[in-house]
Image (cartoon, rainbow, N blue to C red):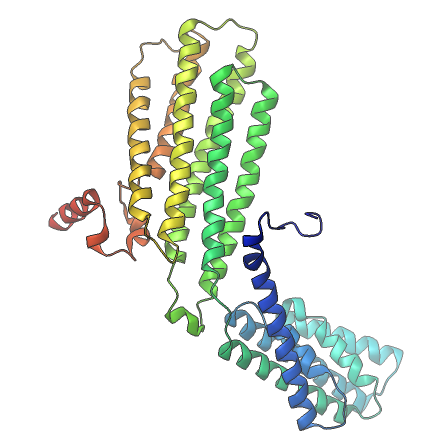
Length: 405
């Protein structure tokens, strides 16, 4: 079933959420097309032309801005093709070389006007006009019906706007954090029991490529939430989440870069150390390092819960998730600090790679991105929607000190 429906719900409670977006869009397209057909038939009875409903289907997009853009492009493409066809049909008539001239001129103008995906609509409109015995009348009907379909499509999007996809954007960002946590769980599990094999390290690094794709998908979802607010009356009542989610994605992108750095070092060192005996100190150090990565994974999961709580319609558990994230980060940083001061000479054994600068710096970067108590200008969007009285005391003290400074 998942081949036909990749997002097939795993529980009945998920069915409405999975079906609602498609059902709403299908209903919007159908209603807009039918209204356009009725209006066009009223304006030009008996023509039987379906240009108006076809235009409405193409114009109505998932966002109001997209509808406006598509409407303008669609009208431009039709006008370009019709004007070229009328000019050629009036002066030259229809022949193989005039048809070639019409197609070439229409496509050239479409490129000049940057009609994009609608470029082919220009020569199509031209050929439809050339194929009839009365080009002027056909051109008039096509232009009028195109304007009717475009106007109704735009009006429909303004009067019946779609919901702003905040929830989809939030879930996409949250999924990125949980994917990174799952990756570090696997790395910690591998390091905790034994030195990982090169094949395992390769699989982990390929996992980061998938997470990179998830970040791109999440960025697209956040962008859709931002665009969905433009000219959308529902934006007056919907929360503005895209600035904060963009900040979260920047943090997670830096976390991914740190994870890749860590895996590169592991990939370089593990094959070189393969076959060498591991000292008791090395085994203990490897287990401690695995515990650190496991704690970072827990911090990422807490961070994912914080994203879900902060940007949901009921942010009642925000403070709890925030404190849990900060507590895990603080405890992990304390263990990492102790690891820095271990008296192990560089190159003195197979365990020395875990004390290299790039390894410790990568873990520290992970912790720094999850340490929201270190409030910088880049995290102001995260705090924008929260009143000062609702912030944890540590954040309030930090903000007061900054204002006094």
